[in-house]
Length: 87
Image (tube, rainbow, N blue to C red; front, side, top):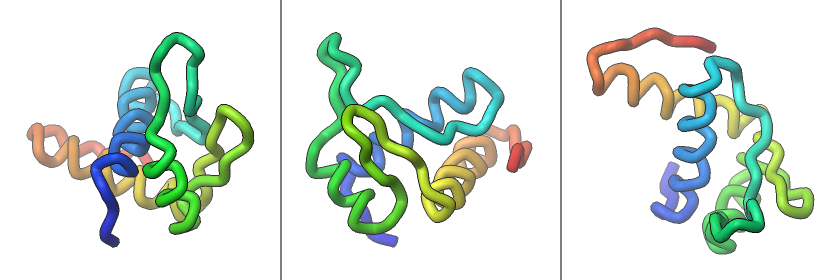
């Protein structure tokens, strides 16, 4: 799957929260009102690919998106010598 870094950044943001919390992330905030806002281009790209569904300032991660997120997390863990599949 081809995607821009703008789209990847949204998935990386979700991965960051999942790594910290240890629980699967099902939704991400797209605009926190404090200056952190996901790229509109990245949002649209992920929505068009069926990886997220946008609802206002939040994006729900779809089943396909959850699979991509799990692959991303596994790649991070593998690259850092700690492959521990959580999903």
